[in-house]
Image (cartoon, rainbow, N blue to C red; front, top):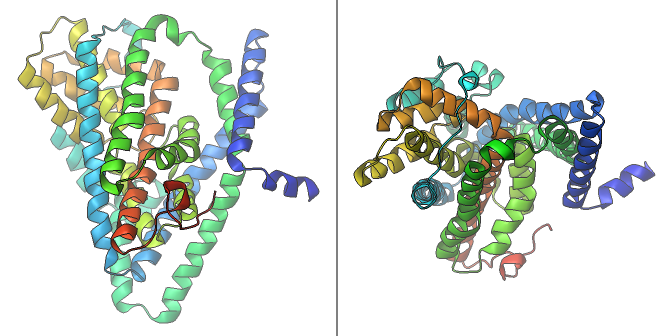
Length: 423
C-alpha cells in the first residue's frame, strides 16, 4: 500500500513520461538483439482494450444521466462547440491543401500495399448514409460494437425521455451509476503509464526508424500540417473566442489528452481520458458528457489533413494537373469526409479513395496509397489521433469558459482568471 500511495502522489503526466521513456529504451534494446518481450507489449493491448471496453458504457450512461438533469444552458454552449469543431476541421483542410501545393509530394507505391477495397466508401453520400444508418441501429448493438453515433443518438433520446418521465429515485440511480462508471474509468487511467510503456515498446521494437527512409518527406508534410493546426490554428480559434492567451489551455490538453491519444491511436478509446480531463478543468458534466463523444465523431481536423495531403500526393504521383477550383472542392470533401471518419485507428485512410476520385485517380492507385498510409500510420495515425482527440477537449472547454465569461464568472487560474481547477 505504501508503494501504491507513493505511485499515486506522483503527477500522472510524469508517470506517463517515465513509461514512455522506459518503453523507448526497451524497444530499442530488444530490437537490436532481435528479442520480443510479449509480456510488455500485452500491457499496451490491455490498456487500450480496457479503455475501448468501458468507453461505450461511459458515454451512454453519462449522456443519459446528464440530460436527465439538464438545464437550458446546454444549448448555447453546444452550438458554439459544433461551430468550433467544424471550423477547425475546415481550416485543417485548407492548411493541408496549401501545404501540399507549397511542398508537393509523390508517393513511392508498391503493388503489395493494397488494402481490401470492400469497405472503402465511393462518395460523400456513402459516408453519411452509413452515419445515418448507424445512428438508428439497435442501441445494444451500438454499445457492443462501439458505434458512437448510435450510442450518442439513443442516449440523447433516452435522456430527454427520462428527464420528462423519470422519478427522483430513478434520476438519483442514474447519477450514482454515472459516478460508478466514472470511478472505474479513473482507475483505468491511473494505470496509463504501464499501458503507454507497452504501446511504445511495441511500436519501437516492430517498426524502428525504417519508415523514414521511404516516406520521410511525406511524413514531414503530414506532421508539419498537423503541428501547424495544433499550435497555430486551434490557438487562434480559442483566442478569438476567449480573448485571452490560448496556449496554457491548448498545451495542457495536448499534454494530458494528446499523449494518451497518440499511443492509443483511437479517438473512441481516448473518450474516458478526455472526460476525466474535462472534470479536472471544472467543466459542467452536462456539457462534456455530450460534446466529447460528439467530438470523437465530427471533430476530425487531423483526418482532414490526412485525406487532403494523401489524395493530392496520389494525384501528383500519377501526373494529374489540379485546377484551383478543384482544390476548393477538395477542401469541402475532406472536411465532410473527415466528419464521417471512424474513431478508430486508420479510420481516415479508407476515405482517401473517395477524395482521389475527384482527380480521376484510379481505385487501384488510390488503394495503394491507403496501403502506404497503413505503413506510416505508426506516426501519421498516432499524431492525427492526438490532434483530433485533444481538440475535443480544447473546443469543449473553450465553449464552457466562454459561457463562464458571459455569466461574469472568472476563468481558471491557468488562463489568468481566479477560478481554481485541478492541476
